[in-house]
Image (cartoon, rainbow, N blue to C red):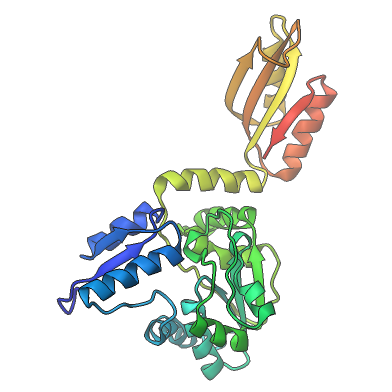
Length: 316
């Protein structure tokens, strides 16, 4: 729109990523935050278009949007002619429908897989019903594909062209974001990491060279810290646990020495002498630890218990 000197007003849900909002504004668009869901936002956008006699452009259920996003498929074939599997995120379905259309036309034997967040799996129930259905969704870090009902156009295309549909949970997604940062040096949002999560979790069947579409990098730095911690916990590299020990000099030091022997990095210690659940002559210690993996977590918990430090609670 900016290239042609046309004004553009972009509607987003009120909980849209700050990074996405600010990036859109920087391109010259007016951004309006309206509605607590995509459905509510679309209603507001249509009303605005009718009032201003403006052209309404649907974010995914529009032939031109599908065609535009489908150009990614042309790039895939051009850069990797022997592609055997393409793994795509599915939200409203515009990107997936466009790319799937191109792949079926140019590489008919290519295996096409669609991925959704388990917290908002609208495609599975729609596929079972034979038409787009509305689902209730839970919170997910893959907010970019948290669409409660597929589009009419996109669903009609996807039901015919996609070979496999899978879902990934929040632990899968956060682990994939962490993997992408550490191994690929790419910062990917939850929606974009969903296809990678499906691959890393072993939930999909692949054939030949595999292309995983990382469809988005709109990450709020504040939320990223939470996501990284979630990802570290999911792979056993971040552990919170509570234990109790005798209230006598040197006992806390002995506990910390044991953790040092176990090669655990201590990120935080809270020492409580009083409170509900703290017995006479004992103290309660909350620990935040950096561990190596899930096996290391198990080793730490076993060693603490054997040394007389009961694991009262453990979260990783």
